[in-house]
Every structure is written in C-alpha cells, then in structure tokens.
Amino acid sequence: MPTAAKLVAALLFAAVAWFASEALVPQFPEGTNLGNFVLVNTVIGVFVGWLVMGRLAGEGYGVALASGLRSSAVLVFYALLFHAIYEMLRQSTRMRFDGVMDALNGMIALIGEYGLKLVTAPVAMGILILGGLLAALVVEFVSHRWN
Image (tube, rainbow, N blue to C red; front, side, top):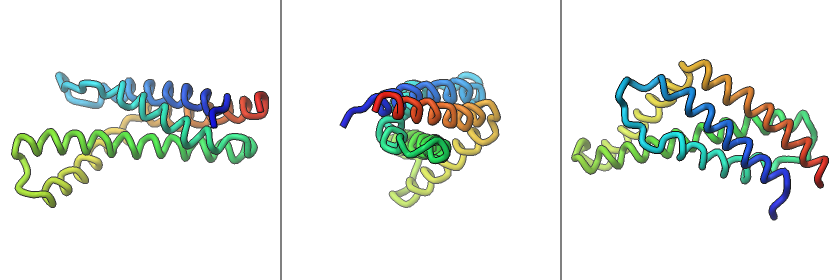
C-alpha cells in the first residue's frame, strides 16, 4: 500500500544511489564506457527505498538508523549483482568464457572487483552510509508526521 514514507524513501534512496554512483565514477579507468551506470543504480535505489526502507518505517528512530544502513547494504548488493550479471552476459556473448561455470566464476570475480572499487572510494562509501542514515531519519519523521 502506498504511503508517504514509502514515497519519500524511494526518492531519498534514489538520491543516495545517484550521488554515490557519481562519486564512484572516478574510480573506473579513464575512458571506460559506463553506459547507464548511474541511471541503473538510481532505479535500484528507488526500488530499495520503496520496498525495503519504506516497509520498515514507523518503528522508531533507533530502528530507523539500522534500517537505513540495511537499505544501503541492500542497494549495494543489488547494484553489484546487476552490473556483474550484465558484464558477464556481455563478455559471454564475445565468447570469453569456456562454459557456464566459468561464466559464473567470472561473475563472482566481477562482484569482487566492483566491490573493491566501492570500498576503496571513501566519498562513495560515506555517501552510502551517511546518506542512508539521514534518509532513514527523514523517512521515520515522515512516517510519524503523515501516518
């Protein structure tokens, strides 16, 4: 059921995802074609905000902080998974893998590689952590204000 808290959570986590993605772009090598990297992450942020954070709103401010961190972690997980699957499929159409298991191992390696880029980008990590916490507090306030 749509609520004001779910709408605000979707918008705020879309913003967190957008800012974190923009902060992560310099971590990639010069000239890398990232395509719709920022847009895809923003859409994932909308879904995470609506489905994860919006559902957890209204439990209190302490729980909201934990829910904000949880939502940021879910956002990172699904973004890493999506981009690794996409890149694995792109490479498999170029016959870079010998079989299915080789492709799955390549996908896991890509998740590790992309995750390492994220962890070594302090600005992006700060945006994800602090943005998730601040977004959660705002969502909790909205859930109490417009019940």
